[in-house]
Image (cartoon, rainbow, N blue to C red; front, side, top):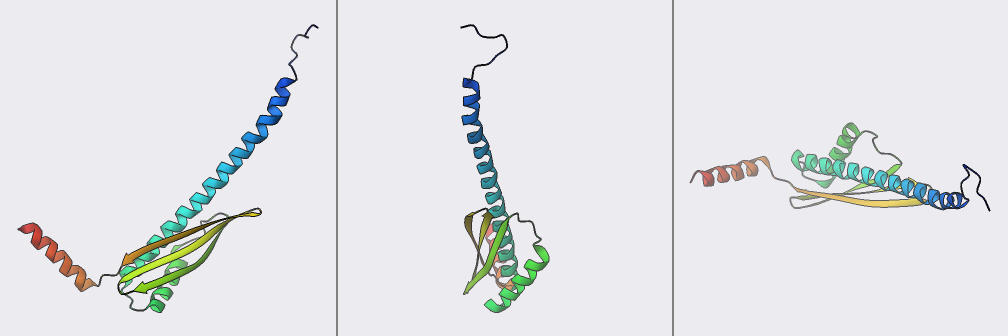
Length: 142
């Protein structure tokens, strides 16, 4: 049987119909995965910034810190998340250690990808900080 000039065998069409959906599905999955990690990194950065600001504020009680964090969050954090639902901020204060936790989830179709982020800092009062700096400078001088 002679092949016509310029014709292509049917095997090429079959291969393309099998490979193309796999390639497109892989690309879509990678984009969703990158979107999830982008939003998770943004949330982690925001929680770290809020933790540092709360630790530096010098507030004494957890309620005062919570109101200060919520007011800072409203002024600082803009809507920069894509298809992301942020949870409530959980604050724990024990002695001088401050810990912030937050959850978030990516809402894509019927799948929900969840993430948890936490950050901690130690509150140092200004007088204690100055004493520590003085001890460091005196020990370096010897």
